Amino acid sequence: MRISSAMLGAALVLGLAGGAQAQSGSGVYTGLMGGYNLLQDGDTSGGAINGSADYDGGFAVLGNLGYDYGKYSFGNLRSEIELGYRRNGADSISGTATGVGTGSASGDASAISLMLNGLWDMPVNFPVRPYLGAGIGAARVDFDNVKTSAGTFLKDSDYQFAYQGIVGLGWDVTNNWRAALDYRYFATLDPSVSHGNGTGVDTEYKTHAVMLGFAYKFAAPAPVPVAQPVVQPAPTPAPAPAPVKKPAEPKNFLVFFDFDKADITPEALKIIEQAVAYAKAGNMSRVELTGHADRSGSNKYNMALSMRRAKAVQDTMVKLGMNASAIGLTAKGEEQPLVPTPDGVREPQNRRVEIVLP
Image (cartoon, rainbow, N blue to C red; front, side):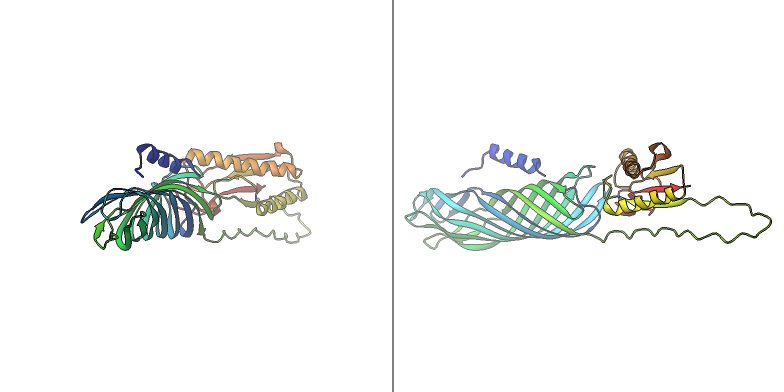
């Protein structure tokens, strides 16, 4: 069938309306996608043949293995190897097809492709991120007895250079899992195959697909928690004269957070419980909380995020029995990283709240 501009526009809208920024940090990933595949009319010519095959809607499945190079100021870059399969059934044949006739048709057209893709995730501070991509490779295009009741219109297969364009949206479900919805235009150079009477003919293979899928990134292991300092007992003072008592050094606790989150994790709750128990045991009347963020977002956004993290720790300490008026809050954003990094790097140990007990 002929692809109208309205249908192409609808496919583009679907490709942009769905649900991967890119996952945090660099690393290897693998993914699987499937969706609806629309094969354009295949204009066919050669010898006494000057016709066109019309195809029904079909399906496409893709698998990929790639590498995410991490976040930069201009966004994420990814490269991947993709293995794909597309298939559509024949609907009708029109034009001049000597020995075949025109009308309703049967058979199918399919393609197995191996592509090398490059993709760019746009730099936006949201879990859902748009991306663009392009790819080149090779495809084996197969026409399995595309025919009318009078005879075979196309048969045989051919290997051809293939190329594609990609536009879509990705959603980081977790730090490792990513969902994606995209539109893909995939095409090859004109395949040369056989007509039913043995005549060689040239035809076309051009498709539009809307794909939905998931990818899993083999991320780096979680950061090792920072060891808490051990309070050494003070030496026994001499009997006389009475020693001058030095003020105790502040006791610090570190609470870490997931990327772009201010939620208290089970590991963070254990650290907060230790801090509250220490404060109660020492009858401490004042606690200072300082929130921090990594350098993956803007300064303004990170300042607000670090304050939300400090407030989340304060709320938890109040639930554990501390007085809210005795807890001071400060936000530092990305100004005081625990691990110095370039701008745009998502360092897990910089996403923290420091609990200081004077």
